[in-house]
Image (cartoon, rainbow, N blue to C red):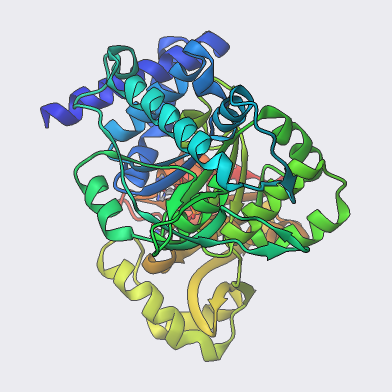
Length: 460
Ligand SMILES: CC(C)(COP(=O)(O)OP(=O)(O)OC[C@H]1O[C@@H](n2cnc3c(N)ncnc32)[C@H](O)[C@@H]1OP(=O)(O)O)[C@@H](O)C(=O)NCCC(=O)NCCS
């Protein structure tokens, strides 16, 4: 309990620091921020996050410090972090110092045998830099409530990339397999797991891999909750011109084909698309922005671009044949007290008010909209997403569809009564109101025993 308290106090220190600098936060604002961020502490606890960091800041003195501190903070919040560090700037510097030339094809280095010792030296140097950062007191600051360890190992098995477009990539490899058990073991111990571009084949040969490929393959193999790219700001600037800040992987092929992005950004987005086929969320963040990781993970709007996994869900109007599916969705929630009981006969009479979210023929979400035409208002009720499918943006999607439908029928205001889901609705633009805000017909039926909170939202 004490540890938990200390960690939360610790959490808020850097938040207040970051946000007050930019927003001149007053104490009530701070409390508001604390409240709004609190659901995320639980949401991210024990989640596995693969973070790719382009190695450039590690070469420049204190430039890496804010990032390292944010990683330390995340780790102290029980986020399971796999850090994939890109060694390209270290390798370039080392090969240059050795007077060796190198070439790229399709954005990948062609690693010749004579490059291998330089690559090993560069990756080793980067690892030493990281280890020294994570050992330093500066990285831990006041909020690290436990020792901070970063561990690495021979967890990436490689195979030769081979000959592509007639070009032999020699010692440039591809991921053959990620050994997930030892990585999970390290994460279980509370360490940050470090992966680099260096990997080994079954025959003991050394290969230099694309660290972005390592990040994608690790995120897929570990069934990570998130893959986060911490990249050069120019990629974010270019991507923002063509992409919304939040999108589904479904939308990417079309956006990619219509946009005219610089080669590096195009490749990053294609890689993100590949990852988003299997990883729930892929985030693109500007690695130079102070606190970018915290702002992305602990605020509603975030600061980067977020790609949600492919969306196979269909929103549709309910029909009488759906009663069984709706009942099995609602009954556990009714039993737990978060929804009011609706008998089958009532559902049969009210089925036209229901909108459903369906996946592969199974009803995984529903919402009812009861219009009060005299007051151009409608009540949102029986709003639920199957517990197995939560935290995938489905609640938000269903609500957006309900709002669209309401607007189309001239509804100007939504209201709802809830006992347990206040914060979720606040995050979606609802504000708490008095019972007097209800249409009079509905106010008369208010259940004073249940004491639900009333929330309303004006529809623009
Ligand atoms: C509320 C509900 C519909 C949300 O569905 P969902 O598909 O998980 O919603 P989304 O994926 O769009 O949003 C999930 C986010 O909301 C957060 N969230 C979930 N419940 C929350 C709550 N009660 N308060 C604040 N935030 C909450 C999650 O942590 C998640 O955050 P993240 O995006 O940072 O990971 C679902 O939790 C549910 O069915 N709850 C039980 C039924 C219920 O209470 N209905 C309301 C009756 S009026």
